[in-house]
Image (cartoon, rainbow, N blue to C red):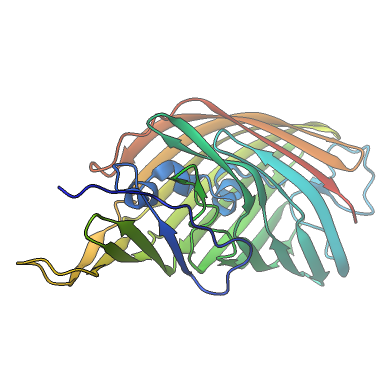
Length: 345
């Protein structure tokens, strides 16, 4: 068996206009394919976290007496103009800061955000490996429909591959993005009566394709592997029961479900040296990316609103887990989620 001589760290930092990224990688068990199929990496992306945990905070409608504990509405006020806020999210697998921007006109709202990870982790056999940097940017358009006791907000989002999907730390891959252009179709619905609120969300993420080029240095020469990856599509459903205890405190409890399809992957191996009985170009098409999994969780938490800021703390307890049998079992356990948001304008 050939010996792998050296693994070089590669990086393409900042923003990407194309979804093709290259890296030099050790030929080891914990390589690119194991990270691609890791459910923990897929489910901890920011655009999934907000929908999976219903981490968006309810807002008080403008012009309503804030001392009225029934004044909360989960739909933003239909005003025209720019607005932005600062928020940070802390989970067991990632911690990031972002500045969500929005422009509202009538019932329409344009949203954009890009996370900066100050601790993005991938769990390897020897322990977690962390990276920092910008993640994938999200652009969206939503439309708010509100009545006396309900609100409905359908939305269409696009996720741009601005994050470095080939980020390497000490020879280990810690992706800051998926490397693909995705479309997300979803809708949030809120029903309210007195101090009770039920907020539900359904979204479908249609994943695009990306390519990765891996270069491996052998004794005989260089092997280039071109990966063509189509991530699995994702369906998220959740429903959260909220009780408005006071104008500043909301109690939360809910259920969430996350379904991911297996995705597809192809590999083309190119060798720059001749070897008897082997072609210099070898292709493997239509392989499973092994990304299929199903999660069902229950959560409970509290939300505090004060001085124009919102703090959400939630505990998530897994109740059902199913994943591809060819991937290592994920240790799903009770976990916490924290979000702080303060509105600037």
